[in-house]
Length: 276
Image: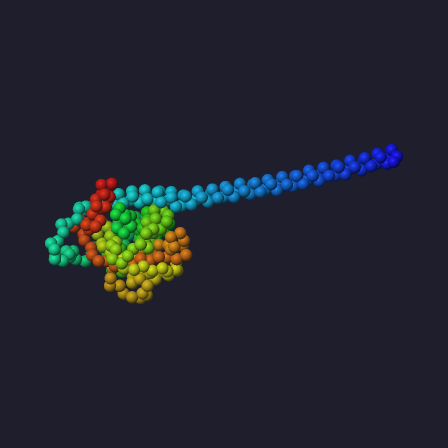
């Protein structure tokens, strides 16, 4: 083999080696770029997961604490301004019918969103359960003060439908246990005028568009009311909004503020007064 051929062969070999090195560097660059993209995507997914987790913690934990404090302050404020004894009246002798206080006093409709006009006590939800009743069902009311009155409904004790709404899992979770009510459970409502005792009757699952549950006689269009209803509405299922759960109750009795609270909630009424 001549010198020229040898030199040409070496030159071709060096050229092939250079091309091979370029291909290797290009492949490494592509692999590095892909690896960087994968790492970046992974970091973004982790970050998104942390953000979602923090949002869930905020929604299910912090909003309950924040709204719970606001609601307790509202109950304490109401109790501080309430005029009347906080101890129940002496029990009637055995065999004596319950004292009749006449027709219930019904305060005029407020129609002032955000105004607290009473307190609800539901022993089925816990012996310490007491939540403010506020006018209005917008987020401004339900996200802070809890149980909001539909402004189209009557006031406590009125003939017709006293209807309220509340959250289940967030912002105080005021109706979280609505599905645990059983027929015969008592729902007590305290206003400046006195105490109204409602008895739970039944519940119903409906679509969000079924507004007839708020009629003066629930679900009965054009019916003239003769009874005093209370209707509780909330989302269903607990972590969804696809449906609404409706709890119906009928008023059993009432007593003026001067008569003291019903014995079943007297301890909680006194506790709220002491906090006020």
